[in-house]
Image (cartoon, rainbow, N blue to C red; front, side, top):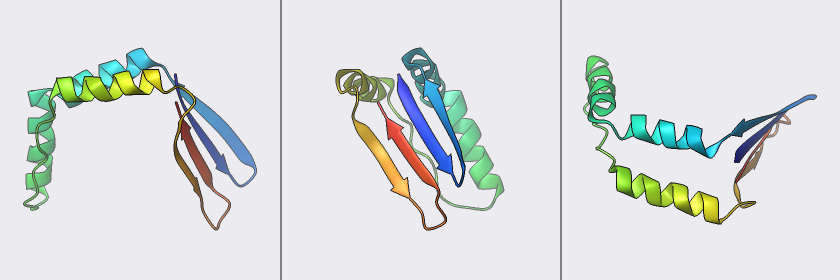
Length: 89
């Protein structure tokens, strides 16, 4: 399970993200329909950048690596205003 911990001044909260939810999100992100929708939204803003199509197999390798390395800290940031964000596997 992916854990996102956020601390803002005096408040702390943790958001657990189960691996099946990550798999569902990866299915949506790698779909051609989603990619087309994102690129059309970018074009409407008048920008020339296009989001490349992500292959499902490449994303599956990343998710498998997440499962194998449980407890690994991916992101840990501390800002001057006291905000802290930690993303752990």
